[in-house]
Amino acid sequence: MSQVLSTEQLQQYERDGFIVVPDVISTEDVHALRRVTDDFVQRSRMATAHTEVFDLEPAHTAEMPLLRRIKTPEKWDPIYRRMVTHPAILGALQDLWGPAIRFQTGKLNMKVAGYGSSLEWHQDWAFYPHTNQDLAVVGIMIDDIDEENGALMVIPGSHRGPIQDHSYDGVFVGGIDPTRSSVDFGTAQHVTGKAGSISIHHVRTIHGGAANLSGRDRRYYLLQYRAADAWPLMADTPWDEWREQLLTGDEVLTPRMENLPVRLPLPEPSNQGSIYENQLGLRNKFFADGNKS
Image (cartoon, rainbow, N blue to C red; front, side, top):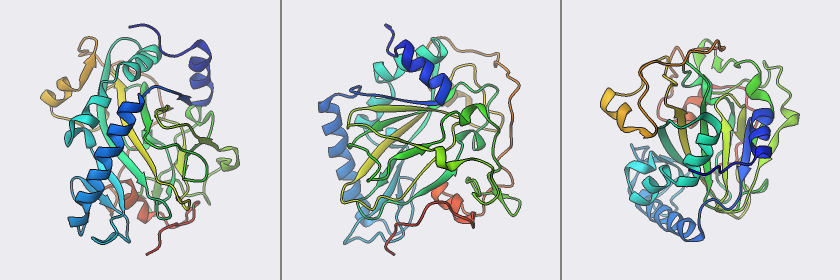
């Protein structure tokens, strides 16, 4: 497979912990993703509580469906599943890590116009530490994403810093208390791009995002990947499923070990279901709540 990322993009990823690559997903695929996502929104009208598929905004009703997240979309529709093995996405990850790439899971975060929930600062590494740090999230921009409609925000270079405390009152809550952290959140940058662009952010990069108070939806399909020799430090997946998640390269039975900072996500959050629910236990928030509930 030919190289996807330029030398400049590889250097930026190493320096900042994130990049945006434009024009990766075709216009036809973007339209297909929008159609199937609209269909899932309509299906969510029947839901009155969170399900294995739907994570709902607090103000969700059958008359006004407000879907916050589609969980593991790749399990429910082939259009989503096809994105997991998109050649340019796998090529970009191989540029970063080498030939063997394993999929982890996906989610489609929906920031509905005028309602989309904020997401407090966090590091993905806090949720699933591994034997090495060759893990990243690839975000497919289904809509044009900018500062006004709730773009992801990242702290450049934070992937080379410490692992922040994601607990409150001794319980893991999946978010960083801004009143107790020394992170300079004023250095944050917005991850923006046109529909069809992808972002890639490092597993240790601090990121979050404000509510969507604009008149435009912001739909962002997030796919989690890892190098094949990165093994979870806590129980993760059954062996057969683990093998099936290997997308390129050969299976590796010897984990690659790195000396890395780790905080285990324990004790488990009182609020289960998704990161949105986990973060209900975080008393001090950085982002204002945009929900009209």
